[in-house]
Each structure stands twice: as C-alpha cells, then as structure tokens.
Image 1 (cartoon, one colour):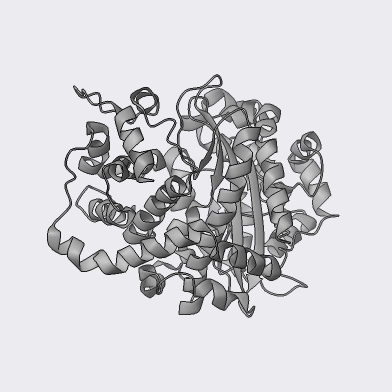
Image 2 (cartoon, rainbow, N blue to C red):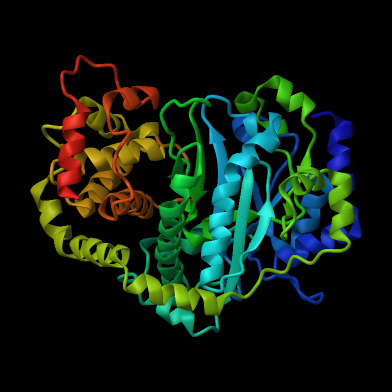
Length: 474
C-alpha cells in the first residue's frame, strides 16, 4: 500500500463523525468511556501472514487514537465490561478464487442474499434485532445483553461448570487492561455459544434450499462446484476460543485485508481494489450498500447514522426457552454428561490411536499441525470416527490430545485454549450429524480429494461405506 493510500485511511479517520461512530460501536454512549475492554488493530504497513488479527496489536480502548493515526483496520473486543455480546458472521468464501468477493462484489453478495434474509427472518421471530454491518466479504450481526439482565443467569446455567480458560484470563489480556471477568460472565458466554449454535441450525435448515452454493458452518471448505469451491459460511467459531481473546470489526472501521494479503487475493486485486469501510446495511438495498463502503461516502453516512448496539436480552431469553426444549439441547446435555462420566475411564484406557479407520481420517491425527486447525479436517475426523461408533465426547478428547502433543505449534496456543477448541469444533460437527442437518453428501472419496483431505495413500477403502455407517449411527 502506498503512502498516499495509507494517508487516505488515516485521513478518513480524522472525520469527527467517523470517530464518534466507531467509539459508539465500542460502547461509548453519550460521551461516556467505551465499554469494550480493548481494541485491536492491523497496521497497514504489515504484509502477508503478519497482517492477521491473531497477531494484531491490542490496546485499551482509551488508546484507540493510536489506531486512528496509523490508519489501521480496527476491531473491538467481544469482552465488554457491561455487556455480553451476541454475534454472528455471514461470509462468502471461495477457496479457488479467494479474492472473488473483492473482484466481483455484487455477484458474491448476491449469493449471500438468501441466507442474509433468512437470518433476519429468524432473528425477527425471536425479537432479536441484531445490528447488521456489511464488511468486505459478508455481514456481522451483533447485539448486546446487559450483564445485569436476568437472562445472564439462564445462559450461565446451560453449560456444566466454568470454562477451563477462565482461570488464565490475566495471562492473556493486553497490558493496561486490569479488568476481571466473573465466572458467571464466562459461563454465560459458553451458554450463549450453544444458543447461537441453535439459531445457526434454524438458519441452515431453511437456507440450504435457497442457495446455489453450499451453506457451511465456520468456514469449512467444500468440494468443487460450478463456481469452484464456493460456499456461504455462517460463522460463530469465536465461541471455541476464550472470550477475552476474540474481537470483531467496528462499524465505519477501515477494511484493508485485500490490500495487505496479496499472498491470498493476488497482486492485481491488492493494487486495484481501494480500501473500504464497514458500513451498516440498515434495511438498504444490496447495491446501494455496496457503494456506501467507499471511504468518502462512508464518512458522509457516519454523520447521519447511529450505530449503538441494540440491547437484545428479551430476544435472547426467548431463544433460550426455545433452545432448551430442542433436540440440539438434548445432544449438548448428553455430550456434557459423556465428558464428565468418561473423563477418567478414557484417560486410563490410553485410547488415542483409532483403529480401522480410513487413512484420510488417521492422517490429520498423525500430523495435526496444521491439519487439525482446519474445520474441514475436524469435520472429516468427526464423521469418520462417529461412523465406527465413537462417542463425540471421546473424539473431542482425542483431538485435544493431538493439540496437547509436541507438534511444533509455536505461539498458536498463546491466546487460545486447546480443550475449548477441541470440544467446540467436534461438538459443532457432531451436532449437525445428530440433528440430521449433515447427511454427509460430500463424505466420499472424490469430495475428500477435492477438499485436500486425501493423503494420496494406496487406499482400497470407500468412504461411501463409512457414510452409510455414519447415518446408521446418527
């Protein structure tokens, strides 16, 4: 990115209305201090793998001016001193043409439109008016539940116990952020994850028949189609990490990922597609909202738009009630019970090497870095082991044992939790199978090769046989 382009983003942030809207999205209402614990930024001088949120700078929200001056991409922490944030991502992805959302934005967002509408409709059924923000390749739907709301205790009662990562918050929080997270807050975050998963199930059940490309959870790679490996991703993967470690883009924040990740989108797009802003859709038409991402137009919009996150406790309360009597909640209770009952017995059995599974299922378990960090591999392992009768809780333990192994992880787990990640990802994919939403239509050898899941070994097994067994067990 040239110095002129850097100045454009920094100059955009000098607009008083833009700064006010960003602070408002961080919880600074009526000139009060932001309620977000910290803000994160990606400096526009960073490139390639260095330009990732996982390694971005994190500072107390009071120092957000430093990010404005740098012309950085800006995100706010999910961790909030007064609220529990409800958040759902909707993204367009194409593994074969990763810059498609930037080179052909209208076409990419048009493919998202049916799922966007279903999300709005499903949220409407529960009185859940999540704020909708258009980003570079999708949407953010976000609201807040006040920590003083009675529904917080209902959410905290859903999981069994506090997350293991709760005791290590102090080791992960950025310098200058002395806030303490209560156990109830941490447990409510886990409970909210299960409720949002239920909402995602409802969306998926309706949306699959309305789209021309597959709908997946959490960025899972799909097999080849007419448009390459294109998919719509409903993403709530942040629930698999500690609350204090994750953050989300801010309304009216600069969006420059395509400029910084030439290694992903290619040099032509990195040079020719201008920086943009994340703007609210607010009932506007698709094409009109795409045009508003232009920095000059976004600055003008900021002067006549408010972006305070809506309080959605009543809607979440209704969602909790509906979730609690669902088959997904029954699966979650069974999963939790298996975790508690089987912990000692599983550890004593030494059951860490699955036998009689296809090489493509054993491969990521034998070489976990970085295969077991990819959702498609976790889904494949979960399907493969469930087809042989493995309990999902035991699969989660197995994945955790691989995360805990010496596999040259580097700093990967410095802000993440191995158990939370293993438990969440396996539970999500097993829950789809148990709910009948995953009929494993791509659990076959051709699709495995297209998704890069096949090790290419001399294998005479047919995954279709495993698929039949999986559906029988489900």
